[in-house]
Image (cartoon, rainbow, N blue to C red; front, top):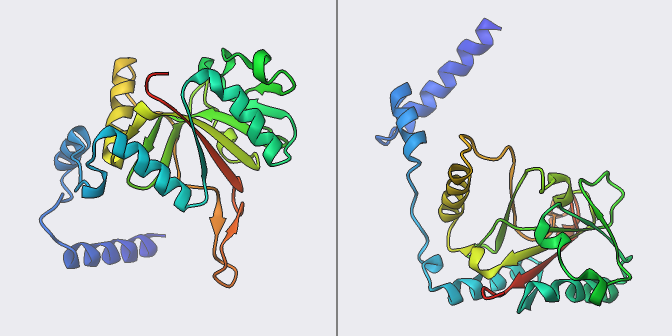
Length: 233
């Protein structure tokens, strides 16, 4: 065991010497300082846009990776939009919701009374899930969802079809901005640490391992449908 550790340390030492760029050294105080200040990297120019342009860029990038996007004027349109999508894809009228009040308080009985709604984590037998995204990243069309009592992570991976509500005002330009929002949220709640799990989802699950042919649904949902709700909703 000691020989293995020694060889490992030698390898890492060699890598550090070859990659030395004046960054953080093996100084615990320097590491703590960097973690406390969490400096941002370079922000891509294509994400430094006005809000309306960021929203359009997000939709474009999401659709480029086989996610589908529908634009809604208000939360009240969500039940009808969910019903329409289920009908279009010939999916069962049964949806597992996250525990977010924004979903449970919707007027489901008015436009989607035929849909059976369940809440909580998925046990693996749910075909369709509906969750609320914490943020959207315009530069890559990526959704950001984090774990919590009202956001079971299993809903992001186990159902074959993943539906996500994203408010346009929650769309940011770059990844760094999303992390800053998470840190602020936790600080506002008096939480010292970040959520246990942060999932960044860019399109449906896919793989190109077999003859470099892209197959959807390899390690998670094979369909990602985004319900993008206007800021004034």
